[in-house]
Amino acid sequence: MNATEVRVSERPLARYGLLMAVCLVAGGIAGGVSAAFGEAAGVGPVIVAGSVGLAMAAGLWVCARWWRALDEAAQEAHKWAWWWGSTFGLAIGGVALFTLAYATPDALTAEPKDLLLGGAGLVALGQTVGYGVAWAVWWLKRR
Amino acid sequence: MNNRLKVLRAERNWSQADLAAALGVSRQTVNALETGRYDPSLPLAFKIARVFSQPIESIFSDTGA
Image 1: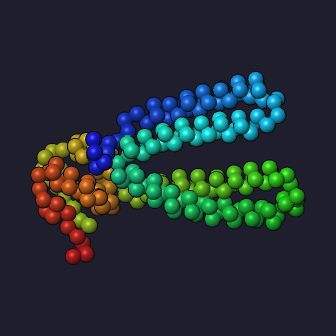
Image 2 (image 1 turned 30 degrees about the vertical axis):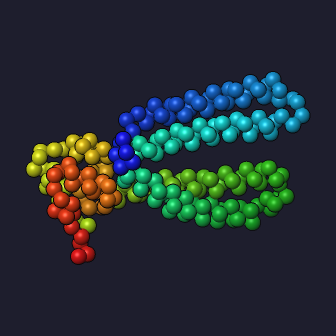
């Protein structure tokens, strides 16, 4: 099959299940290693980096296979959603982030870890919602 | 861009799913092509031409021309 002969995924649920299974195994391994060696000094970050890295690598591998199985219109919908949806979501998330930081008296005196996770979570949520909305809009306009 | 996909498909009594299978795309993509709301890439346009055994210019026409 050459690059122009794309085909539609026939088993999207199986691919999703495979990704979940890989993440489950990675989580189990990370949990086991953490239980066995987590108390040793300096091992925690290595375990986190290793397990998250493994999960990300598995996710990227599944995504690459899924992407190649999409036809060109489906790919175009995702590219459009990635740019417009994520950009608008980033902008809206940024507005929410700075508004909350300004309106919350102790926001800038909170623990750096809380600020980091809260800010990243808020922006990621905005981008994810924006992506989903933009993807749906792309297809609804072409029905 | 206008196209004659729907007419050509009807002449052959093909469903959108039949054409989608012949082209290796989803039925939703065929629908988007037929309604003129999605313009195919050159490789897909050539594939459509091969499936219908017609030159590209007899299937697609530029509305701006």
